[in-house]
Image 1 (cartoon, rainbow over the protein chains, first blue to last red):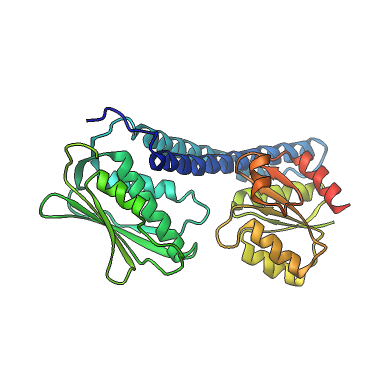
Image 2 (cartoon, each protein chain N blue to C red):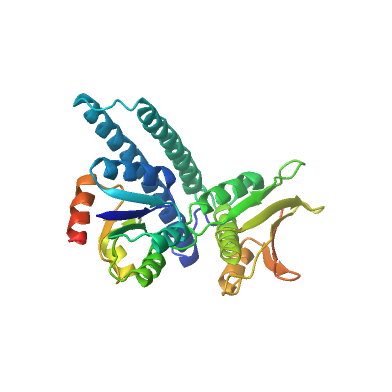
Length: 220
Length: 116
C-alpha cells in the first residue's frame, strides 16, 4: 500500500490547484472587505476630527463587518486546513456527511457556483474506508459539473444513502442541460476506479450517482 | 465624472462606493452584471469599475455588453485573482486593472487618468 498520495498524478495535482485557487480568491475577498471597512472607519473618524458629522451608525456597521469577515476568514482557513490534511493518509475511515459538507463549502467559493441543498441522512452517517483525497476529487468534479449544468441561479440537490451491503450512494439531482461537456469523462472514471467507486449518470442525465464501497484494501 | 461600480461582494461594493463618494466621486453601485446593464441603459457613465469574477455575467463579458451601449465607456477591472501577468493573459481587452485589496488613492489616480 502506498504511504502517501502520489502528487505526480496530474489529476491529484490539478484538483489541489483548483481548490487552492478558489480558497485564495475567497481569502482575498475577505481581506478586501476588511481593508475597505478599516479605510472607511479611518475616513469617518478623520472627517469627525475635522468637525464633520460623527456617523455613529456607519462606524458601527464597519466594526460589525470587520468582526464578521474575520470570523468568515477563520472558518475558511479551518476548511482549508481540513482539506490540506485530507492528503495525509492514502486510506482512512471518513464520515461521508463531513466529506460532503467540506466539499460543498469549498465548491461554493467558485464564481459560477449555484445553490446546493444537502439534506444529511436521518440515520447514522455512513463511514467508509477509502482514499479521502480521491473521493473528494470525485465529489468536487460532480459539484462543478452540477453548477455548470444548472447555471449560477439554479440549485442542485445532494443526498446520501447507506446501502444494505455497507456501501454508500451519493446522488446529485436536479442537474440541468447548460453544460456543453460530457461527464463523467474517462479521467473521472479512472479516479473512481482507483478507489473502487462507481460514477455515472442515471436515467435522463438529470441525476448523477457516486457509489462508494464500505472499504477498500488499497488504492489502485 | 460619473462612475458605475459592479461587484458581487456586497459589503465591499457598498464601502468602496461610500469611500469614493466621500472623495467627491459621483458613483452608483450594483451587485450583478444584469443590474449594471439596466443602470447603463438609462444612465451614461464615464467609467465602470468591474469585478472580473461574478456569478452570471462576469466582468469581461459585462464590459463588452456595456461598450455596446456606450462605446466611449472606460473600464477598470478589479480582480481577486493572481498577478498582473495572469490577468493580462486572460483579457487582452482590459483598459486597466487593480488587484484586491485595493488602495483608494491608487484607484482615484487611475480613475482620473482613465477618465482623462
